[in-house]
Amino acid sequence: MTEADARPAEPLGQAAVLRRALDHMDEGFSVFDAELRLVAWNARYVKLLRLPKRLGQPGTPLEAVLRHLAEHGAYASADVEAEVQKRLVRARAGRAYRSQHRTPDGGMVEVRHNPLPEGGRVSIYHDVAADRAREAALVSARDEAARVHQLLTTAIEAMSDGFALYDADEKLVMTNRRYREIYAAMADMLVPGMRYEDFLERGLERGVFNVAREEEQAWLANRLAAYRKPGAPFERSLANGTWLRIADHPLPGGGMVSVRAEITEAKRRGSSATGSCRR
Image (cartoon, rainbow, N blue to C red; front, side, top):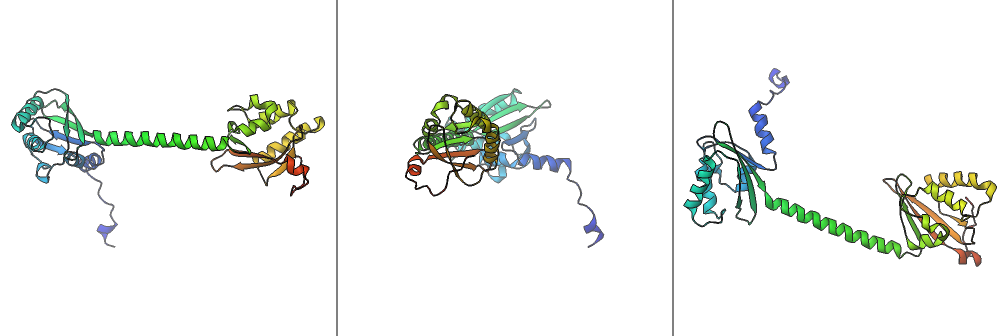
């Protein structure tokens, strides 16, 4: 390695940094001086206006750019010369204004022009067609998300098992009809925002769970611990004689899916594969 190789690279000059920054803008940028000649621009300006290389050079007259655009159908008028002169007069007037022009592929560019104190103007070119495409894609994505959400909600509502979804803060997000049927004695309380701990406590108060009074506090602590660190599905009976197979499934980003399958008939027939387990 030579001494030259070991030296750190020279920092970019301000002009180079500015040019690099401008070339990373999503919008086009141009500056024409008091003589309406191009003195600064970015790559997006040339691309949005579909300009040939010869018109993206220092000193390019604004008139040449306008004539090229007019000849390629950028403006509503078919009179190229009249359109060019009209826009030159407006550019020399020293006022801020906006304009639009079409692109050969059917797009639309909106331009914001602002005068400079020493004469000339700075212009920002915005791709309206890209905005519309993004908006259309966003609307489409929202519609698809709504459709999928409705489909999932309908499917969950139609499940034969009880289903409940809790968020990462152990607050209820949704339940299905079957879940509310299973816990009918407290269905009025199964609303979004209800904490899982409150669900257990209210269930004890209303006699939903098959737990002796003197065992309630230990049962509550055990159930909360089992919920927060779920293991294999287990079986439990409610106070009304309903038997459930309970499965809690943690979600990767936090939250829990709780599924309740009624197995009362299977228990009565003595065909349950596992014994009862009170938690």
